[in-house]
Amino acid sequence: MGGVLGRSDSLKHSVPVSKLEGKMVEAMQKKALEGTSMKSFNTIILKFPKIDESLRTCKTIFEQFDEDSNGTIDPQELKHCFHKLEVSFTEEEINDLFEACDINEDMGMKFNEFIVLLCLVYLLKEPSVIKPKSRMGLPDLEATFQTLVDAFVFLDKNKDGYVSKSEMVQAINETTSGERSSGRIAMKRFEEMDWDKNGTVTFKEFLFAFTRWVGIDVEDDEDEE
Ligand SMILES: [Ca+2]
Ligand SMILES: [Ca+2]
Ligand SMILES: [Ca+2]
Image (tube, rainbow, N blue to C red; front, side, top):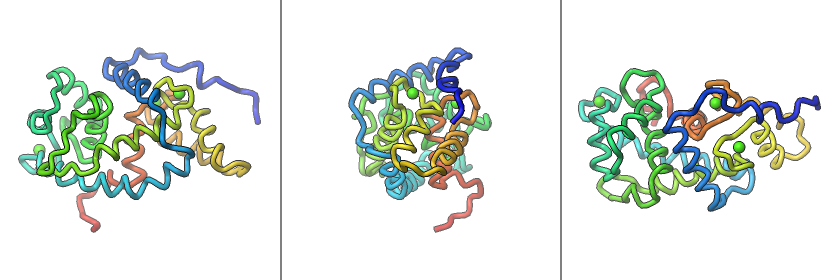
């Protein structure tokens, strides 16, 4: 092992964080105080199929809110969505969220962006805010979002609301002790997550990576089922 310890941890945020990111980090630190149900990186992996299944049921919700059925949810449709879900966000909060999740900046939420957005809503608001209305078809979505929060809290060893490269390595090494390849896997996973390459992974980046891993960001619209 080389001797460059702690470097990525210490040169964290050279750019000031956005208001939304600040709120996310704060909310995540609060969640961290509740602890995590994850015991190892493998427990997270084992949850993938269930999370995948649950997120796919989200597709119906997505289609419901895509009022003009053009495959994306625009700001106006999102406002209707929040209204129906009884999520009381201010205009500014909704816009901030929209901007944060609209990765390709085309003023539309694609399915995977919408899922990330809903999960951030879950994080930012009190647990009861997404009301389990059966007609909306939000079955165990909250439980799934909680699982994702748990996974992030597990990875974020120092509970600062970000996952650093060394935390990722630590999490994976805890699981597969002694395997040489685990460090490389950790690096690869980390690089997939840290898409702005600033050395830390936010919950938002984590969620986007997740939608890729479970395969719900498929670009083409062909239904594989
Ligand atoms: Ca639309
Ligand atoms: Ca951390
Ligand atoms: Ca990053």
